[in-house]
Length: 287
Image 1 (cartoon, helix red, strand yellow):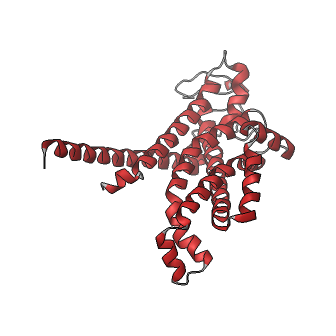
Image 2 (cartoon, one colour):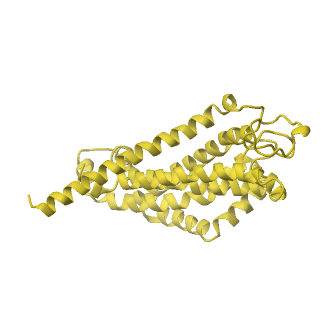
Image 3 (cartoon, rainbow, N blue to C red):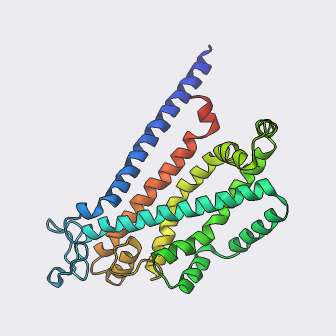
């Protein structure tokens, strides 16, 4: 083996180890966020909904690490409690659009014909409108609330996954292994579940993880505009909305939930990028 080739192999191995270590680290961080969301009510130092006007707008200090809001509620407790709503609502939303879009995409790619044409034209209709504007319209019609916000964002999120799944299904549809499975007598549902879905799951999973940050921002945006979570429920977007009028006098009321959104979105975006690198065929071929 030449020196150049040896150096190249060594660099590839170092990169693979780096990506794997980075992936493990980010998975641990994501798991910590999920653990905080699950056990939020046990981690809060104060009751996140208890009002004490004598403690209103207290700056960060030993008693209240992130300060208090205009009602005297502890901001750290509300940020921790808000993680339950913000993170789990986002994960439910991503799960809904991923499953719905993938099913529609597989049906379109496998069936073709009129079914494909009709469903793809419907997806074109949803994609023709600016996403957030369309979500605002749907959430406004439904009347707000976290469930209606999820429905509104799901309505604009599924076409991306449908088109991705359709393209991947078309690429797999005429492959030799699938033709062999057909000749062996496998039924259509078995072909779709046992052969098509496992072979297209990788890119869909990466897209879903990368979409978590975007969906969290959009969900927080709806709550900020009053079309998501309703007060007094703790949620990061609505907390920013409550504190925006006091940004100059009590900036911690906005910075605390804003920082939580920033950290969470950054972790999931980095996780999505790392999962994409880890599942890259070039990287996998060297493992």
